[in-house]
Length: 188
Image 1 (spheres, rainbow, N blue to C red):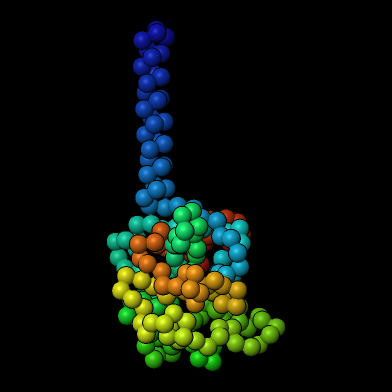
Image 2 (spheres, one colour):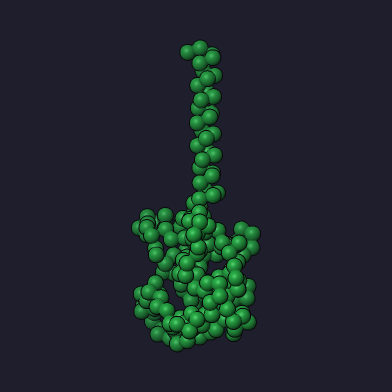
């Protein structure tokens, strides 16, 4: 092989590797990103150490829906994973462990198994209204009211530290566990 052929082959490999790196980084930055779950606030849907895939594109093309699981940022490099309960304009309340949105009772099937397994059969989600928690009658435009699935151990929109989550702070939806393999799959 001549020196020119070696140089051409080197540049060919350099281009291929460079394109692969740019492609991979683009996917991770703009489309899908892995996030590691920390804490018990989303159990049993997600457990500490689960690596989930965040879909950054889908919700930006369509809208976020009630009960979507989202990843959002409160402070730089501090991400939370929670479930959307209240959409803009919604009034949210809990009474006797039942979710009421705009006065209508909603079933939360993703909580059933977890609630049944509790030794303490008290309320899983304490009674509250938006007015009591955040001083607002409805969820403001461009914001969401979010809760963790493990309501007794979740820091979520009920806390003034988080409050309503601005759509601008949402990184994307999370619904697929990538790791550990025994939990691999869609969680919705």
